[in-house]
Amino acid sequence: MDLARWIGSFPGWVFAHNGGKFDAHYLIDHLDLTKPIPFTKINGRIAKLPFGLAEIRDSFLILPVALKKLDKLDIDYSKLEADQRETHKAEILKYLEYDCRSLHDKISKFFEEYGRGLTLANRAFNQLATHESVAHPRTSLAYDAKFREFYYGGRVQALQPGEHHGNFVYLDINSAYPYAMLADHWYDPDYVALSELPKSGAQYCLIDFDGESRGALPFRDEKTGELSFPNRKARWKITGWEFITGIELGRISPTKIHAVYFPMGRRNFRKYVEHFWKLKAEATVNGDKIRREFAKLMLNAAYGKYALNPRHFTENCICKLGVRPPDDPENPWGDPQSNFDRGIDEYERPQKLKSSPCYNVATACSITGFVRAYLLRALNSVAVPLYCDTDSIICGAESRLPVGTDIGQWKVEANLSYAAIAGKKLYACKTTDGTWKTACKGWRATPEQIIRVTKGETVSWQNDAPAFSLGSRKLMFTKRKIQRTSVERVNF
Image (cartoon, rainbow, N blue to C red; front, side, top):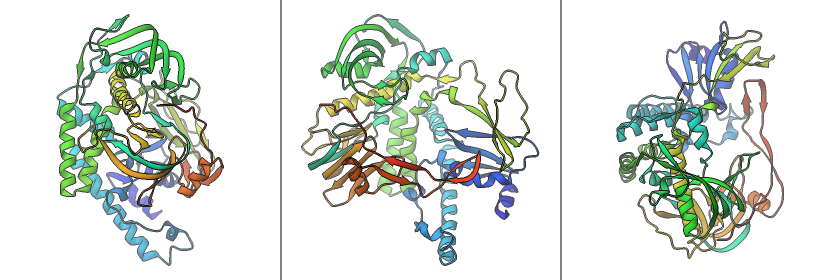
């Protein structure tokens, strides 16, 4: 209660790292609901919440990394349990104070260099406009709908699931998306629709065609939205980068071209990329971990805003139970999510959009397509590819890719003697120095657990940290049963 009173009396922004999914929920019961309180949600996270004179913000949206990666004391979290706190009170207080001072320092430095904003993408997009001296073109919802079908994410595949013993390497592209941004891409909204490939510049196009793909092209499941790279005949909507690469590698056999969309205006983002690549290199030499991470974040966050879908933007409001916020006849609130224990109603409605509310999704299509095509070439030139994830490959050690420190080159992240591949984002690899490199998205697992899943066992897991919802006071602990993924093997 004392903390809530102090926060509410502070006339400024109050940051909590990952607070939108944790800390802010503890403060909901202390809101003054004498009138409705509008707040901002981003992907289910409370991004900003008015709280008395203060505004609570989630710093994870500005610095989407674990703080200990930058500079943070570590602590055994079991010491924070109720029956242990008093025994370890001095250590806990030291940890909490350092945590707060460290977060204040990082956020302050970031704002000093890149200005204030709610999200990293906002700041990166602002920097992109500054360094490239451009105003980002806006497009209509109809334009966005037409070309959003050509937009896909990264390529994540368990190419050879199972256990593998031998000599392998974990290879990673140096800044894959920034490297892609050095090339020219579709930029201005104007385009020409063609019935066949142009004599030059096909790589910049978006192509709608029928044909067979043999593990080359992204395919989105209509029901689940899940991305795969199957061997199948279908109608494909993809970028020219992937079309040309697939043809050259003999992995695409087109039978009918429905349309080729040729951009009238193209540009690269070389000034922006070279500026932040230089900053990152200088910070690395100087041992400045924080500014190195800032530069890395700015390099990777800039292009994504072109792909934002404003149809998903919402307006949100918290009210006292039974109280309704003022309605807009053109955009009324729906039925609330009521929490009788807390005595609150949460309202949500689609955000009212401008006439041209979108950035050019075709730019994002081209940049992501470039990276998938680059990865496809690599998969076809390495020995024994076992796994790939957008900008990385686990493969045989005798593979020959351009290894170096330059942007776009490959680096050896680890030499491996064993790999257990259980599925997408789920593997455990033992390095030649005896350490483990693992991936287990959505849960925390030991290498032994991942190996058990790889062998066909089902592993039960429960998160130690609770998940929160505005609609409930109860602590909810995520539970999962982890199983090996069923995949279609792809031969390279």
